[in-house]
Length: 216
Image (cartoon, rainbow, N blue to C red):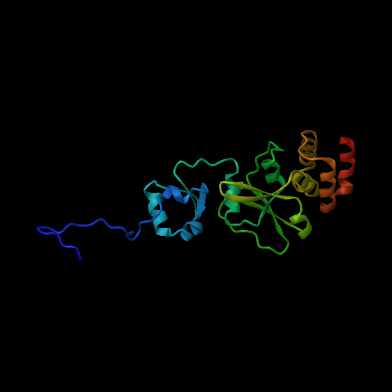
């Protein structure tokens, strides 16, 4: 115990009081522009603290359990990040993949995802999902991984996306599938061999053959 003659000098505290964090808020987001409450919890941030920061304007709540700094500006793939953060195994496909690869001018209001035949789709309040079940071979073929705002997005590559569009042409329209095929080939985003292999996996090679021959 430290005594000082005449008065007691109060020393500054070197520990954190309840509700205080050892790390400034901006350091929590050093490697990702968005974080889920579960990820913040592993860094010692309780949910009550998150609510307090949101109320004070030090943090913004993007969606259920998803947070970012106040100056965060969502990019065009923000809805995909919101899906991939809690459900990292889903594969973005069809219209959403077309949009990701800039092979369509359409902006689907639903996020199109592929899951396995026996998997349960993620339950999210937002965004709205359009779920398609793929066979194991089709689900794992031609999947790329992209890092966006700290989230890992699994997206079908260009060739697989085109083949999927022909497989689900009754749902998205043959005109959309043909446009995607033409833009992918003429824009040199893929080649005939890659599309043919994807078409074989998707079992639409016979359907796509005349269209591929017309472009060849």
